[in-house]
Length: 179
Image (tube, rainbow, N blue to C red; front, side, top):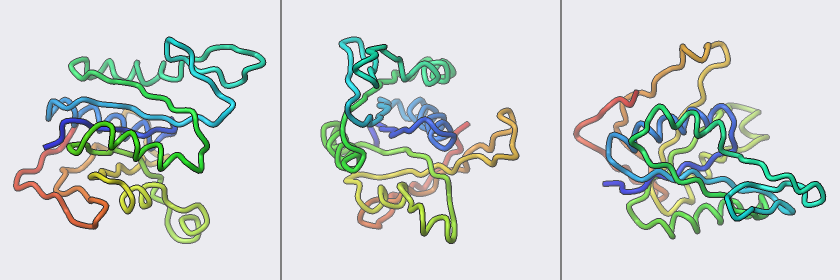
């Protein structure tokens, strides 16, 4: 089914929850996991994968410290961290380029704030755009409620179908909940 899972992140709560689901899913189906982030110029990447946000100060920063801690829960899952420097206006295209590079059997697992009403109208929905425009299947993970303590996070429901960019559905006769 899926050989690669790509998780675009901006390191917020919905992204962290989507990373947890992506790791669980990758472990269950033995898929490779790629975590993807876009940084705006003038950021630069060092040879060891760290980021320099301000070239004048030139202090390398490891963006993935928290994600590596989270990934220790699923040691069997190899996680590849990918950072691209590019304009935010081009971030969708950069993600689509990475997906094409990874191949056809790729699943995007991304978080959403699940804004509704006027907030959604004003802020838009990156997840909705991804479902419409991605060249592969997209699984959208809703952020946990602010009232929930970290140890009370809602576990994602059983996955019955995954939306694709052409509005078709990939449906499994067996569903499974991912812890």
